[in-house]
Every structure is written in C-alpha cells, then in structure tokens.
Image (cartoon, rainbow, N blue to C red; front, top):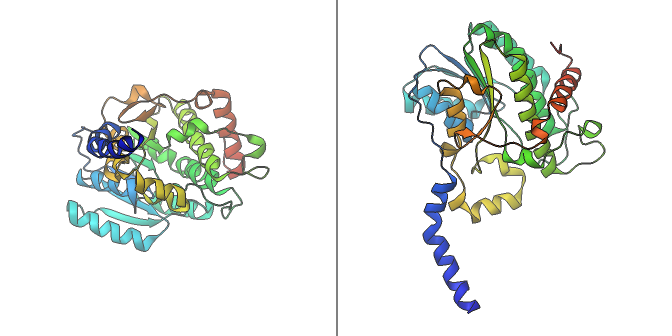
Amino acid sequence: MILLLLLVVPILLYIAAPQIRKMLSNGVCTSTVQLPGKVVVITGANTGIGKETAKELAQRGARIYLACRDVKKGELVAKEIQTVTGNQQVLVRKLDLADTKSIRAFAKNFLAEEEQLHILINNAGVMMCPYSKTADGFEMHMGVNHLGHFLLTNLLLDKLKESAPSRVVNVSSLAHHLGRIQFHNLQGEKFYNAGLAYCHSKLANILFTQELARRIKGSGVTAYSVHPGTVNTELVRHSTFLKWMWRLFSSFVKNPQQGAQTTLYCALTEGLESLNGKHFSDCQVAWISAQGRNETVARRLWDTSCDLLDIPTH
C-alpha cells in the first residue's frame, strides 16, 4: 500500500500541478488605463517583479525611471524594454538603498530633472542576508527594505502631491505575519535571525504604508502595500534552502510577470482612492496581521525612522 502511494502521489501531483499553479497565481490586473505624460519611478527595476512592472507601464506610454544599484544591468534592461515596447522614455538612474547619500543624490537629481511624479513603486528589497549593515549602520533588511524606501518616499512626497492624483505602492510580503517591530532591537543588535529580519522589515512596509496614508489623506496622493505572491526571482539568492525549494516546487511558484500583477493593479486601477492604506494580494484587499494594524506602533515607527534618518516628522 505504501509503495503504491509512493508511486501514485507524485503522478497525481504532476497532473494537478498546472491547475494548482493557476489557483495560486490568480489575480490579474485587467486595467486598460494608458499613461502618456505620466512619470513613474520603480526601485529595483532591473530584475524580477520590478522589471516586469516597468515593462508593462512602459507599454502604456509612461516615462519610466529604473532606480537601480547596478546601473550597467539597468541599462541592458532599459534597452530591452525600449525594444519590446517601442517606448524610448525608459531611463536608468543610480540608486543604492543601502546608502542614504545615494538616496538623497537620486532624489535631488530626479527633482531637478522632472516636474512631475505620478507613481512611485518601492519594489527593491533584500531577503535573508547574513548579518550586515548599510553604509549608515542600519541592519541590512531594515535599512534597505524599510528605511531606504521611507527616506526616498519622504524626499519625493512634495513632488507626488504637486502631481496629484498620484500613488505610492510598497511591495511587502505575506511574511509580515511573522514580523514584529522590536524598538529595543530594531537593528538586530541584540538578537538576529536572517529569516525573521526579513519578516520584520516587511511588517515595517505595511505599517509605513498605513501611517503614510493617514498623513497624506486629502492630498490627492494615496498609498498601498502589496503581497506579490511566492515568486521565482533573485530575491532568494542568499538562501540555498529557498533556492532548492523554489526549484523543487517550481510548478507552484509564480513567475515575475504573474508576481507583478498586484503591483500593477494598485498602480493603475481607477477608483482605488477609497482604499488608501490598504494591503493587497492577488489584486484584492488582503488580511493583515494584528501587528500590521497597530496604529500606535505605526506612528512610533514613523517617528523613529525620521529620527534615524534625520528628517522632519511632519
């Protein structure tokens, strides 16, 4: 009987895999909105979900800024998108989210170059890094995934308001359910686990989105956080285990184009303003953890982030 199960189960899984993958990959952005004259900034747009998001928005006529740490790789991707979409307004600019000087330089140059900004997509991220610090001494997950995007958004916020209606989309993760904001250990100085550090930073993305939405209410700018799904990207490069799992269960993992759908939904869908601050998965509002709904923690995280980055709390 056991031998029979060992033979049958893999066969059934193989047959069912396409249907299961379809089920896990549901949620498609069906918006037909076109973006001529609109300006978009996407962090980490030289690979994975960011690249697919940039390609789709370029196809719709937007002027796209690929904000990348690796400019050379970004240039190759920009040329690819230009060729595929016919849109020559795909630009690459240096942005290292692990260095606040780079973030400030990017923002300064962008503001000098562009008169408007309609969509900011905070997509870049790191996952399960060995313990390390950013150029400013922040733990890498919290520094890149949260503080880097927090600073970038605040530096560009006035331009977003001037260009309203405009949107901020923060890429978070289902992993936020395991996250906790521990202010006494925010930089992992007392205890560090690579997997949990990622979860904490993804919770920070959601709390940031909600507090940002509260503060910009009525300005014409709206903010959303998204869970893209389990996606086969370079994000797992630091984890041999996850790379092995992704290969083993590849039939159940989204490709980058599928993973970009919820980001695109929040960036493009008309009438989404009433859902300012909400979290989305598979192109619909998704449940978040009790920690992710804690307004007190969200406000304290905002103030703490401002202190760490030496920017006004406004």
